[in-house]
Each structure stands twice: as structure tokens, then as C-alpha cells.
Image (tube, rainbow, N blue to C red; front, side, top):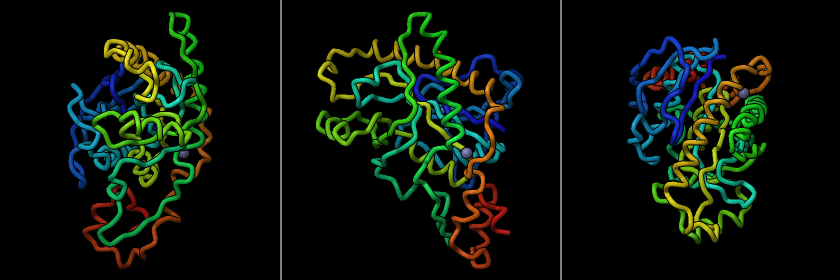
Length: 295
Ligand SMILES: [Zn+2]
């Protein structure tokens, strides 16, 4: 396994990383969010990317997800843990809780942009189960293990195994009307970034899962008005400390990954176009992502 970590709001670096190198890369799809940090954590090679760049400079709708995932693939990353701040659409998913996501709902308004394919090559990936089942199980176990220490220190976090993440476009948060509709649909949490990443990771044959860290109740909640920015930031900080321990636990337990999921062979049955008629320029552009199927 080579582990990629995409850090969301509140997570811009990883403590305890050894032999750190900052690597800037260009991709055929443009520039990633920031330099990648590569290094070793508890004996595991990792590649870290702060999704919104250090200093939080990039809007969700400005993110170049294709470049971000392409970069991970270029480093040889096989598994991506996405750590993401979310709003809750359910009373029982409280701030500082963690939801291991297993479904997404697309409200990006950019759904046709989230693919590496096109320009003479068509692929339809299976996406009914959009996260890696092995990573999902291990992320849940890691979070359960990590939370014990934090709850002893005064947190009161619960870990939820499974949930649907609605990906809104942003950058403004939901109106009450929108939030109440999403809630009535039975969705669990709301964020602005993870669905495109999950799709592109699947196309790149990288295992992917979202660890969603709840910072607040979205605007549906009657007590929403009482939530201050200070409270949200305190939750974000507490969540980022917990996230760092979840990552460490995930690495400690990595031998439990069986490597039997179908993520790494997704494209074997997904590319529709015969390789003989794919334009050379497209083949070149896709070499890192799908090169072995196009030779
Ligand atoms: Zn997988």
C-alpha cells in the first residue's frame, strides 16, 4: 500500500512525518491544489495534499480535482483517505462525531467535469458502491480505536459506520429550505468536495474512502442560529486532532487490508472505446491513469 491523504478544512499538515519532501508537480490536467508532502509516518510511506492549499486559499468550485487525483496516481498512491469537514443533516450525527461515508449524492452542478475521459475515449466506471469496502471497514475500526483517547480527554464523539454525503456546490452554505429538503431525503451529511474525488479516484483505480468529521448542524437545525463561528472553529480543531490519530491507527492496522477489492482493476471492464482508435494525444494524456489498457 502507498497511502495518500487529502486533508480538508482544519487539516493542513501531518504531525510526526519523517523524511519530508515537498514536491511540486504539473499534470496534463493542470495544477494540483498545492505541493504534495511525501514522507514516512510510523514506517508507512505517505503522500499528503491539503485540499484547499496551505492557508486555505481555494474555493470548492475552484478545486482541480483531476490534477489532485492524477498527482496521487503519479506518486504511485494505491489508497486515499479523505479527511473532510461536514455539516450534519441528522440530530444523532452531532458536532465532533465521525461518519465513515459509503454513499454520495451529486449536487455539484459540475457532474460532467468529473472524469479523466473524453477527447476520443469513453469509459463508464461502476459507481453503485462508490467507496472501497476494505478501506471503509478499516477506517471505521481505526476511528473507533482513535476516539477512545479523545473521549477520555473530554470529547464526546461517536463514530458512525456508513452514511450518505451530499456534495453541494458552495461556497455559500445551504439555505434553510435546501437544508430541510436534503434532510427530508434521508441524507446524512453535507460537504462541498468529496464526490468528484471519489469518482476520479475510482477512474484512477485508487481505493478511496471519506472520513467525514462533523463540525456543525447545517441550517435546518432550530438551534442553528445559536452556533457561533468560535464553536465551529473549536470543533474543527478538535476534529483535526482526532483525524490525525485516525490516520495513525489506520496505518497501525493496515495489514488487515486484504487487497481483494475491485478498485485496482476498475478500468479493465469500463473502457468502451477500442484502443486502436483512441487518438495518440489522448493516450499520452491518460498514460498515468490508464496507460496499461491503451498500449
Ligand atoms: Zn479498494
